[in-house]
Amino acid sequence: MILVTGGAGFIGGNFVLDWLAASDEPVLNLDKLTYAGNLQTLTALEHDARHVFVRGDIGDTALVPQLLARYRPRAVINFAAESHVDRSIHGPSDFIQTNIVGTFNLLESVRGHWSALPDDERAAFRFVHVSTDEVYGSLAPDDAPFRETNPHAPNSPYSASKAASDHLVRAWHHTYGLPVLTTNCSNNYGPYHFPEKLIPLVILNALAGKPLPVYGDGQQVRDWLYVKDHCAAIRCVLGAGQVGQTYNVGGWNEKPNLDVVHTICRILDELRPRADGQPYASQITFVTDRPGHDRRYAIDATRLADELGWKPEETFDSGIRKTVTWYLDNEAWVSNVTSGAYRDWIAQQYER
Ligand code: NAD
Ligand code: TYD
Image (tube, rainbow, N blue to C red; front, top):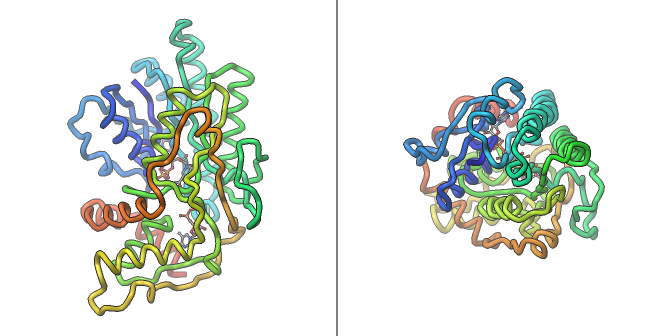
C-alpha cells in the first residue's frame, strides 16, 4: 500500500485515479478536505476497496503515526498543501501551518515509523515530496530554465512556504537518513482543477458570460504541464528515483498568460460558440496585477529525462483541448465545485 496525502485535491486526485487504474496496490488517502479537497473527484472509487479515505491533517501527530502503524505503507507521497498564490497573499497563515509545520510534523511521524521498520522494509521505504518550480523565484526573459541546482529564491508566501518544506525534507534525509525524493514541477492543468486557478477559471467564466480577468499586461510566462504527465513523472521518481535527489518536472511549454487565455477562447469558439456569435475573447478584461507577481517560470527537466526516461505525452495544444473538453463534459463536477466556499472566494477576490 502507498499513503497519498492531499489525494482529494487537483493533482493528488488525478494521481490516485491514475494509480488505481494502472495497479492493484491499494491507496491510503489522507486529506483534510479544505476548500480545495473534493471527494467528488474520487466518486469512481466510492465502492473500491483498494481506496481507503481518511479525513485528517498531515500535521496531526496522533493520527498519522496510528495510520502508519495500522496500514504499513511502503511509501508516502506528499501532495497535501495550501497551493494558491493569491490566497497566500490574502492570508499566509494557513500556508505556514500546513506547508511548513504540517510537513515538519509529517516528517517526524514518518521518521518515527520508518526507523522502527525491519531492515528490508526500511531500505525499500520512500517519502516523495511534491513541490513546485515557484521555489526558484522568477526568471528574466533570456535566463536559462530552472535546473535542480538553481538556488531557492521564493517571492510569495506560497513559494516561501514550499521552499521551507523542501529544505525540511532535504534535512531529514541528510540528518536522519530518511529516504526522500523531491519533485519540483511547473504549472499543472487538466481535469478536476479547482476553478480559482487561471485555466479552469477562464473556461468557466467564459461559459458563464463573465469577464476573463488577466492580471497586469498578461505577459507573465508559465511552463504548463498536463496533470497526467506530472502524475507519470511522480510514479517514475517513486519507482526508480535516486534517494535524496530532487527532480524538476516540466512540459517545455512556456506560454504568456494572455496566449493561454486566447487559446482557450478559440477552442470554446469552435466547440461551444456563443449564442450571439461573438468571440469569447471579447470577455477578456485586464485587471490589477498580483503583488510581487513572478514574471517567468521555466523548467529544465533534463535530469528526469536522462536518469529516468520520463517525457511528457501531451503537447500544450493536445492537453488544453482535452482539458476544455473535460470541463464541457463534466457539468456535475463543475456545479458542485462552483458552490459554497468557492463563491465566497470569488466574491472577495474579484468583486472588490
Ligand atoms: P490543491 O490545493 O488542489 O489540493 C491540495 C489538497 O491538500 C486538498 O485536497 C486539501 O484538502 C489537502 N490539504 C490541505 N491541507 C492539508 C493538511 N493540512 N492535511 C491534509 N490535507 C491537506 O493542490 P494541487 O494543485 O493538487 O497541488 C498538490 C501539490 O502539488 C501541492 O503540494 C503543490 O504545492 C504542488 N504543485 C502544484 C502545482 C500546480 O500547478 N497545481 C504545480 C507544482 C506543484
Ligand atoms: P495560477 O493559476 O494562480 O498559478 P500560479 O500563480 O501558481 O502560477 O496563475 C497562473 C498565471 O495566471 C499567473 O501568472 C497569474 C495569472 N492569473 C491571471 O492573470 N488571472 C487570474 O484570474 C488568475 C487566477 C491568474
